[in-house]
Length: 578
Image: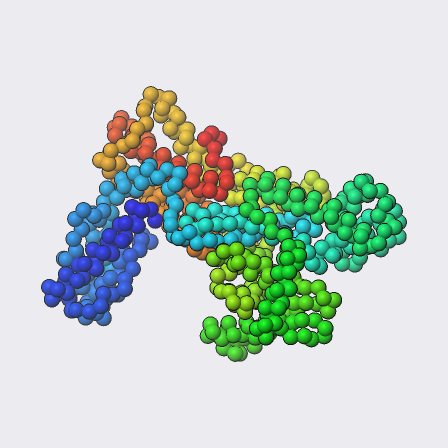
């Protein structure tokens, strides 16, 4: 809620508590501890702007019928110099308060004063947060899951920044381990096949045409000079050539998507620095590792069971989960991905981040508890690691699923999507569905330039306001700052409803940051556009009453400010003409 809105709630709570104490002092209510009560916005605005259950919540303390208690409380409440205009008792004892015209004027004044800072808050108290997202394997092009994760992660980071957190965006590059070994084997086979077609391709190799392209490029530079060298040397040369190019391609695609990471963290540095070995030694010192069949195993089952028991879960519930221990060091002496993951998240905490947020695909569901448990096991707080699980996305065209690019005839990649769909549409539409829901991305809708396309609908509202302001000024009207009295002229339901919505901007930002759900803000700004169109259709902006016209122009500008603040926060174009 805006500062004005927040102050109203805080002031009203103070006044209600003072009224209860006054009634108790007068002997009209029995002495006792003040009840815990809520102040909230009613679902139906005709029931008031703020409702409270204070009389019912205090029934045990007051020892009187809630409606009677409400009457007594209201007889002692002092609402002078407040934004409350009137009140009424409803139902079994709810108290409904109605805001005055001065309240709505104050909201508009706050937006006018704050401008592009409107919506910011100190909710996060500067807590250092890392949002790690996308983190695609560099062995091939980025896919549609990365497109959704990129939009979700970047916009989540944006709302958390707006809510007062100190936010860091990070991409974890898996440039070590099994996938790189498989990458090397695949490149080697394609390179050798150029000179000897009988060379077999590994069964588990990467089949993508990008592997063939990289091998062809390497051959164009080096010819057959690596055919006769040792396999390890050949594979290392191929990886040293192809991997940086793949990472550069990922960075380029992210740049096109308007995503700029604060850091691209290389998994290989964890191995080179000895961090993975240190994790193994640390877990050994805590008696959480044992050897079996030549491998080193982490006691995941023990740690996760302890966590679940502390959460009140029954042993029967735990047994049904069929928890298992995890290999950290394989028989061949190579660490597993999980070992590196523990080291990486320890590294995050050691860099001073107080909260870690990872955006993962839903197929990583089983990895969540064991990584949080591992943080507890090595002496960190696993509750400070939060995982947002993201469901699959399905591309649709003409109402049917699409798997192949029209341009290339291959599986659609992030780069293909961004060639076909405007970046604004992709970023906005991917944030119209919560991460935990499967999503159909409509390619036809994403390129439409009409109100059916959600981003176009919001952008059009902004452009429409800009057009209104230009036309007004072209007619010789000088747009000016209104007096408070002029702003109180905005009393039509369409005007007050829109102002109510504008006042909720920073509370929507906070809710999005708290719940790790930037779609709340996308839905909010869509509602702002809808309520603006309702206001504009119901209330003529250019009128003979100059004061009323200026007040309505102020409301137009305030709406424009909020839409602009959302779109720019999400790195979406904010056009003045369409």
